[in-house]
Length: 592
Image 1: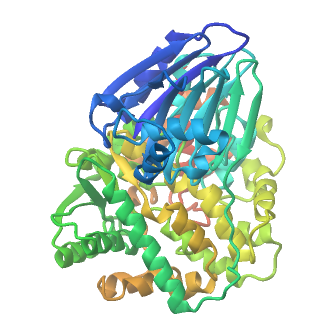
Image 2: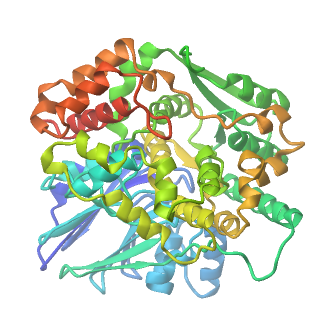
Image 3: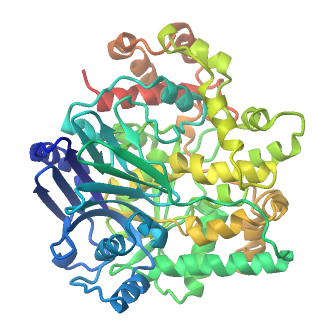
């Protein structure tokens, strides 16, 4: 895992090496082990390295292949790099390092724009072709690794986070009205290519982009997920065995390619508990596990230790239990917001930030259970949507997912931000895409390819990489995702959601964990807002900066502040927290 950045200057002008130098400090936490720079003519590249595979200096970046005339910066992990390396060696390619980065260079030379199709893993990378004088950037299928960019008539810049682009300067920091609508109606999700800032865009997952020195830009999609039944029918037992085998392989791949120890983020839920069981099944001994909890509120417990403790006892892991007092949550909240590439409404972002700090003191790599709920219909709203037969797809989805109806959004913002119902139009487009058999197939297809990218995948990447910690997510393995997407929806929706995973877990996990209601990373102080947390949010929303920004209608703000623990979204998020978080993010990253 690393941080990458670069600039391609147009019309033959030399690249601004100082701009790259300004970007690198904003990426330092993503890659604490080494900093590298390279430039030639109109291109300049920068890299911050977290050494996980091939710890030697031979895998430092930017990686330059003088023979092939290629230069690379790469963030991620390629799980099939050893097999690809052997294949490329048979075809005459020679390697000078033992890592996965050099495999990408040879793959580009061999397959060009099709090279991402051969990469099994999580990645964002940029390759400069010295002979063709063009830059190729690509992002993995699931969007696990980020790639942001800014583009104008003078240059193309890219980086692993918007903070680096802002540090380089010259970015339009006006609020994007389309992104703003998505932010407040789509659970904090802003689908690519938009971000909350007009001048910052992000590459869509599963796509590559070529930018040449004349400012021509061509983007192509190299992967399309199919949510359709296979030609040959399968029984439930066959589906269960196939998913179990694919999950075993996904866990094994993420264990095998690391030259450092690997731990597990153990929430106590089904998904992370199953990862522990599969790692134990794979022969891992002395497994490190990590859990975090917070203070209880009258309405909600602040930890799930009673469940994670059962897994620790069964598998005898070397466990680290972390309890965070509310006073520390509030004190550390600004740090977590500083680490957010984009504003994140998920209340567990702070939890992941604080957990990652502790975990990074023990290991460099962890496996985590994100993606299982979206892939296998684990959330309560999927069942609600499936049971609702009275609406068009977008209405059927939005009723149970949108944070605010469009009419409420118009009440929330000032006149200059009132426009069309952008979220309804975007979701209608996504649900109308081909390659999905049924309504719930279409919903899960959209969730896995679009919504999950910004919540929770982005959250996990940001909060772990803020501490130089690499998070690997086996449930988002491309082969497992493709297999699960083709599975009949009833094998997901059954048993209150995640039926097939619950079947796999019988005998591996205690029944109390399998049969418990779906839990969520508890952070009650940011949900039931009162006391010092209310004072904190009131100060933000009544600040001069917030008033001068003139984003929120004051009547709406005042109503939420007068009833701080009464206004919740369909997904049970605090609407007041949403307003305060965005304003705090803007004040943090765009100081006056």
